[in-house]
Length: 348
Image 1 (cartoon, one colour):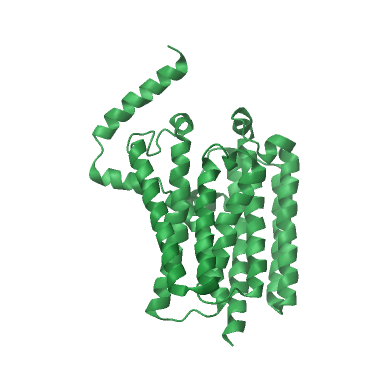
Image 2: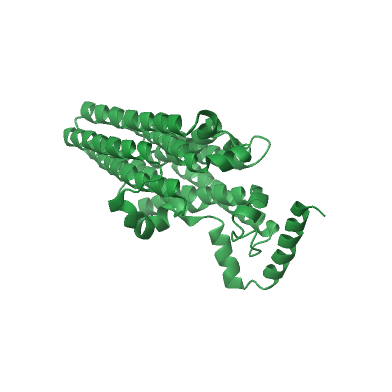
């Protein structure tokens, strides 16, 4: 009996034993865990920005319920579906790399995980249909098509034969589209026609997601290469990957500053350019020493934001997480301030 078969038999036997002893409470927790609640956070700033930029939401129960609906649709349900379906198709890999995940640990069977995916998929699609019928017209259609496209991409991202995640040229745009592009449009369409500025804002967030995904892959270059994954780091090496990612990020900051100037948001221009200079400083630091700590952020990542953005014992990953805090705070603060200013203009 070869080692792979022995390992698989061991895990299957252990899984059957654990499954028999899982309590109802632990089963519910496992169903929530497979939806990976930490990832839901990633869509919320884009949804908030889209709503703020509309300038049309009213402080009524109806509008608050609509806002809750779109947050649930793209967060726990839409993003949750992408995580649960990924766990199903990565089961064999997780048996080795992450045996404590709900399926390989035996807290959920494959059938239960599949049912979980079907339920959240159906609820997300159902909310999309409801909002389409309730809002109607072009705005309702934008919301429905957005969630349909995001759900389809979430599936083919993990599922063969396409498995978009295997190649950075398909995986990064897919994530940027589902997490950062359609979320802006859907949230904006919830309360108004798409504002002209939102096309730009959605595009900037789309490219920022791509840049961060490209950069994130450098930490796992060895495993990606062995697993046949075509990350940019595997294709062109870590140093060139840094340069590509940093170039995209810095161009986003410059374009954002130019847009804010053209929109008359002059204080935000100075804030954006100052943020760019700070970002460049830390980019140089990360480029020179991919394993080095950003000292004042070490505790923040490990004890503060660590639960939200993830933790790691890999030095390269810790350095990236620290840079991510700096970059995301600078970018997202400007996002929300600009969205609020755009919304105020349309309120008047």
